[in-house]
Structures are given as structure tokens and as C-alpha cells.
Image (cartoon, rainbow, N blue to C red):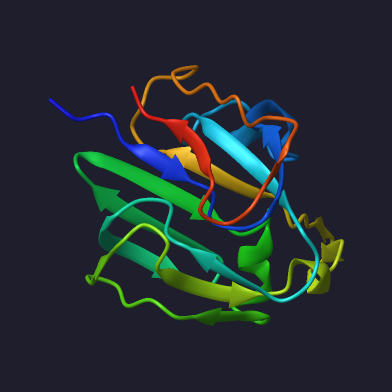
Length: 155
């Protein structure tokens, strides 16, 4: 039995519905339900949306597992193709983090619109892993958030 977990915004920007993410894997919630953030331009330090253990950290994405809930933060769409360029990893895989701890530094405005023939986007999906499709709702959609603001609470 998992507890309800508050999931916080990992970066500042405008909250958008997962269905608006320009990638069908995220938009159709194949990875899991959640919301996305169109990040504000400029250098940004992305923070952990929950307290827990960093189970995976890559330049463009990280997963934190806490209280039975895994949350994926994916910095941009197709940004894995950049090979880590433009990202500075601040967290250590296996470490314990508090909600709001620094994870990755990047500048969403520096993400090109395409790379090697693939479209890129700076939109940041925040996904609850292994949760049923449609199980996340958020009152924050359509509005601005600052890093650390409540995005949604898991069921």
C-alpha cells in the first residue's frame, strides 16, 4: 500500500497536460500518467519533485523512488540525442534526496529544435511510473509554477 505523495514542480514554467507533449510515448501515458512543464527560458536548476532515492540519473532525465512511488522527470523530448551536451548532472545515483534538492542544471532555451533529423522540444514531462493511465489530475494545468510548487498528489 503506497501513501499519497505530493509531487512538486521540478522547474519553473507553464504546466501543460500530458496529452499536449509532442511525443506519443508521453502523450498517450505509455510511460505513466503525469503532467508536463513548458520550462521558462534561461539557466535553470531542476529539483527533485519528491523525497526518496535517486534510482536513475542521466543528463536528460532522472527517476526518484520514494514512499512506493517512482517519479520520472524527463528534460525535453528527444534530448537524449544531445549526448549530455548542455546538461550538468548534480545528483548521484543511489543517493537519498529531499523534495527540492538540486538534480540537473540546464538551459531550456539552448535546446535546438532539431538534431540529426529528429525534432526536439524543451517540454519537461513529470511522470508517475507504474501508475494507471489517467490516474493523475492536476489543478495546476494551464498556469505558471515555480520550482517547488505543488503539481499534483498521487492517488
